[in-house]
Image 1 (cartoon, rainbow, N blue to C red):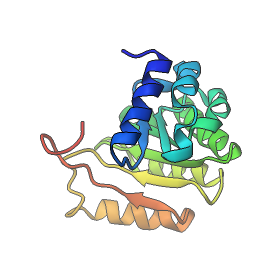
Image 2 (cartoon, rainbow, N blue to C red; image 1 turned 60 degrees about the vertical axis):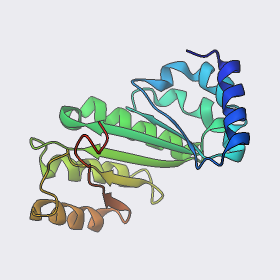
Image 3 (spheres, rainbow, N blue to C red; image 1 turned 135 degrees about the vertical axis):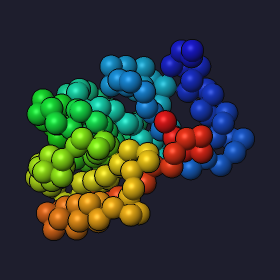
Length: 178
């Protein structure tokens, strides 16, 4: 919709008209467009925290974006949580973000078929990246998080492995996201 220069101009205009909290870059595969992101968001992170949310399959591209990012978030959901190749890519991505000096988070979106053992293995792998790694468990909308001991137990066991594990509840549609 926008050239990189036009988007950079719009960001500057928006910053001057209002106080924004942050910028979020997300989509199917934003790391496929590193040149565009670097051009459009150059300098934006100096005044606004800028987060990029991806699926973790292009860890080699993260270092290029260090000047424009504040936080790198890698999200893995559903069946991808049981795919060792996808999990390895996600862990390599958060490691690349950590090596670049960026804040970094791994978001796990389990569904009812995702076992606790799978989630705990991923928490262990993410823990290997370092203590600054934030891990967020984000169960599917409609999960009985408030009435299901599973989530409490999972967070307790995860916290025994890594100190920064959080549970974030999805609000179901039409109020919530996705």
